[in-house]
Image (tube, rainbow, N blue to C red):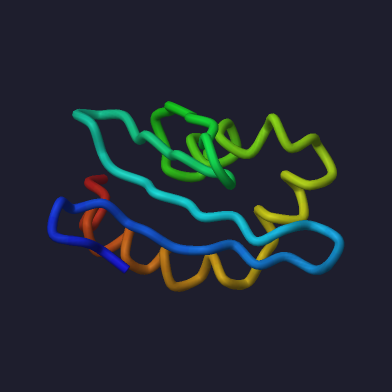
Length: 90
């Protein structure tokens, strides 16, 4: 869900034994910033939202990152990000 500050907030809820992860993403100029994790979040910065999220999840380990990036709960935030970005120019 997009909040008043233009941040996209959502929860990744992968299968056990991985915990649910709170995520906040926002656009910063031409880059994307993602904060993910319980407690003190990890931060990822990249050109694409997906790369920023993967970077923020990286401290959880490669397997956990792969599982979270495949989580179907990413569908709704992906649609919200696409709406914010708009159509790509050719």
